[in-house]
Length: 260
Ligand code: GLY
Image (tube, rainbow, N blue to C red; front, top):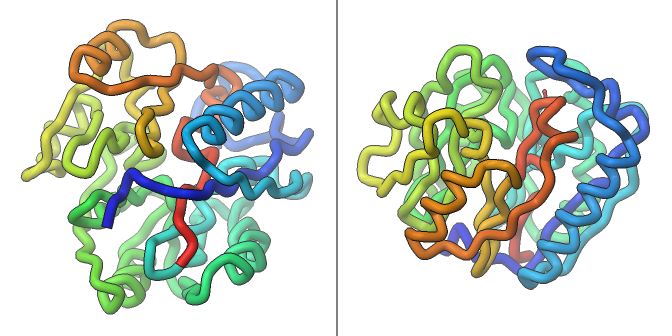
């Protein structure tokens, strides 16, 4: 399996209610028009990288629903409808289900516990899942029961305290290499992987997306961008200021997959 090569991506348009999105610390309200513009640029970047886009309509009742990654996990063998741990986001999973039912021959549903896609990093070898305020042991056990029979190994890790999601602090650069913050790397969770650390002071750029030949990377983190380019990665820098106000990053905005 390749965890970086895909044919499709699912995106959901930002709702006007995105201004009410959850945030750990209030540093300002997103501008809905700018959010839409940034989202359009992100969609175009995925298209240019080879994605056929499944564009879903905005859901006004779910301010955070633009962050589609938290509602489902897409694997080559099938899709899994997750159970977001934030009460205001739980209904996003049911809203995503019809789309995946139409695209995949096999769709499983997590019925117990809580688990959000932001806590799941799929590599060529493992599915790494970080326990967090949004993802609990029961949710991970339920995911394991689905994906192990599909041939995947699950490694359970701990998201550092005060970090929203495991992938807030990391992203996959290639099947064997992650970009990560020093604090996450120090937890030992990437044993066996090559790690490139973000430059100190640029921790907010750790969440990135490898899609085929390019890495979608938030603009505004020049030192880490240089480090990655020097390591041979082809970056597409995209504005993420609006999504960052409600704790969103590059990976949160899409589900990447190849239909089975
Ligand atoms: N605003 C994204 C989240 O908290 O899930």
